[in-house]
Image 1 (cartoon, helix red, strand yellow):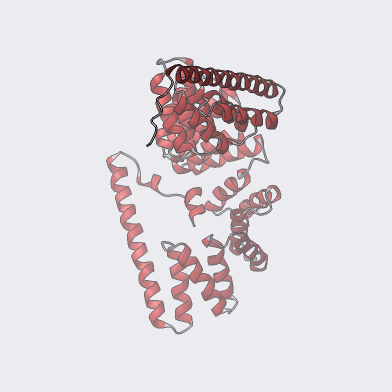
Image 2 (cartoon, one colour):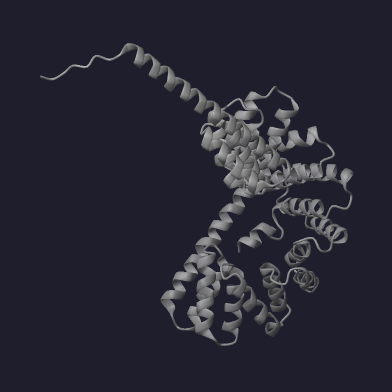
Length: 410
């Protein structure tokens, strides 16, 4: 017969009390250990012992896995060392655990911003901006960060309102005005560039970067003489400013002042020996000045540095064709036409070379491409003339050297 043992009620109660007491003691011990680790982590952090502090905060998480403070401090320590991509996940975790922790959302946004995760940073800043009182210092700071992030993404039109607000709030801040001028230039708001330029002059009368921006705007506005004046002022302000000599040289090249342009391209190369565009246009000047032997090594060097730029291939093809190296010329001209399929000159040179080689069918194809591109340019010019007439502009304003941006695309 199976015996049925009835539980002893008093024993059961006593056991339960004992287990409860044991759990309380363990929890108290764990809490005490966590507090001790937390104090140690703070102390190490304040002493600048980042690695030891990280270890201590991880120890805190072992005791309390959902400790938002520990995650926040781990994010801070990573950011302090410039490890912004590593900091962001810690901040995100802390934000999930404690969405109201002061400064946490801003720290996440800054880590994303500095880690070049600009789209994610904008999402965080947009939400943060909604939570700030209008016109508060916090709202202004966030708006500036949004503008800078938009600028960094190349979203210049969207950056402009924020950057304008930033320059209004901080009228003495030169970098904000330069970012605004760059954004206006990128969106073809040329008068905006000039307006900001005049504001910059009140802060720094010798800003080479501002002079260059104004020069590019004037070039786009078909004022080549004004553009040259601005670039000369930029050279005077800082002859070692990147691209300052190239910009001036390009403007002179567009005016067919090849000797003067060559001097500027040489100056740019003295500053930046591997400047592909300076090498290319210096070679082009040598070709116009009938110095093909001087042009040849410059074009070869430019292609070695960046084979994806079309103009060196085109000019090298022209030189080789003139020297009778038809197959070598054909290879270079094909590359030029492939890199810049809308370049009439590349197709024209190809057509001529094919004709000289007796390849009539190929020549016909390239002549047709040249003709089609020419018609497209003519149609575009007619459209511009009609718009200019409607806006009361003179037709002469549409003529002039190609812009620097067009040159770089070649």
